[in-house]
Image (tube, rainbow, N blue to C red):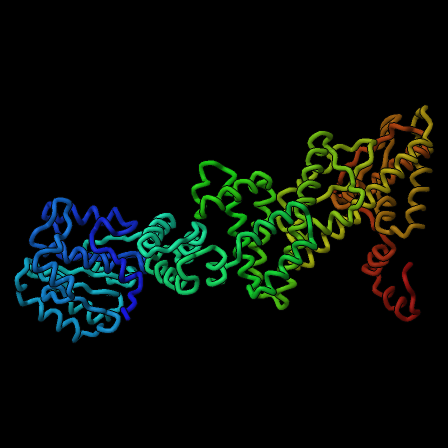
Length: 588
């Protein structure tokens, strides 16, 4: 029975032209050989499985070849090439620094450098995983690496360039290897399938290449594993089953359910994913990648960023045309936030289901926000929502809704029109008590605004059309009556403010009001929606208006409450406090 050779060894490149995805390096090396500009030390850096050691062996074989071809490749016919192919070359040494990283190992290598090559032009040392050498070993290697004999060449390879000492880097010619692109890996797998008589679906080869994550050696290892599982016929479903990958169908279906606002369908789909043995976080990561691909498909110049099979790319573009970019971006933000908080959640399934519930309502939230924006742009006024509680709760549960709500500026002029309470934009929900309180306050304010507007309209209807001139007597009586009404309603602070305010009738339709502080002015502005209709109705003047002034000195000239008056008298006569305490008196 013939021994099995893994594909990574069987199809290992033997020439520069057969190296996959590293043309920038192979062409440079070929030109250096052709022009006799070879450095004495090379450092090959890059991810695993991209061809660093392979290129080192090809370079070593080629520079020792006695009959280099016209396209700067080894001839495979001379004694040097044959001995290399038979792993019997005395002039090419390979050292694994992962297991030979001591000072003694490097000293032994330095001793060998002293001897000239046998039957070849160069003596070549390939040191793999060179970053594993100890600092002492690096230091023992420095002098030889800087000034080797003319026949000695060093080729170092590493996956972690940052661990190499700067003194080593400065003595080497550094080459950076790239990750193998998906299309290059798929092309190589397709050639291997043709050589081995294997039939494979294009989508299956793409999945293998994606799973390899840029490493051709990993792609070939996965390929061998799939061939052992499926035989000579590789199909997409067998590949995703063997590699434990969620099918594209799940994500296409989930996106359709989001667009259809189908909450129950999303939850059932997620339950099916869990029952099939997949992790919830795996589902979230795949869903994010799917939405990212949909966003990429929105623009013709970025379609190439998708690393999927052509048939799957067509499905992505079709679904992207049906999905609004705003919805996709907000959904991507929401799923990303869910994944970030996944590990910290105690009930992880419920945490993901909550995100899916938000996704199912996301389109409705965006539509409502767009409608409010259109109303605001056209009229400059945002009417209270018919179902404020429902809209507020829905929007608060979506972190992305902040960008869809605009601030409403409060009115700045003191006119007869009632003043609506401004609605502040919602902040992202995150468990903050202050945020929750502000949302509750906003909801109450919106409901009150609607009621007050109706109340003011009803009150204005009872005011006669004819305006009577305002006099000190009529206004003073109406002012006192309004203060008494505030007392009955329990609004003590506002009542005291009005009692201590100074007013003056300045014209037939205007009253000047002087208050003690800007805080009292704010109280008056908040009460304007109540006091204006009352005063206009009482004095029978529809265009009555107030001019409000603030006098900072004014607050020190008056004692606003009985408590203040008592304290002032007690400061002059300390016996008043003793008398109050002895008789148990309370100030009303």
